Length: 149
Image 1: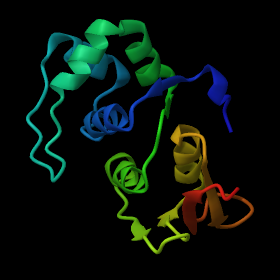
Image 2 (image 1 turned 120 degrees about the vertical axis):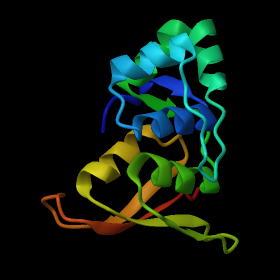
Image 3 (image 1 turned 135 degrees about the vertical axis):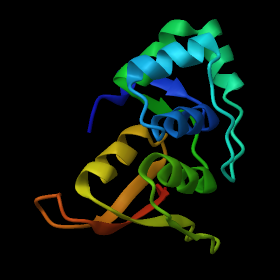
């Protein structure tokens, strides 16, 4: 796991906006340039993203935004539905929600690299359990759930 202490923090919504633009196949440089220029698409997904919010963030905190795009980020605070949305937008995987009180979780079939990518953005207080092979390349079913205290 990478060092989360040095990662910039993004809101869950800003992280979804960044990942939605990445899903268009944009390079980091193109994403930075187009957000700065306000040259952004209209989103027709179920999320109805308004990318103008990213242009505001990039204008107010350009170094934070550049670092988030080029070096990675950690989400400040995740919600269970937000995790499912991030998995959908960033990884293109439809995850299942378990909303039974005391057993809330997101379940998703992930490869080792997908699990690592998710693990690196999750906010404090969440854990990923379950999994695939020891080699880590085969897909496995993972549970993303709050850390039980």
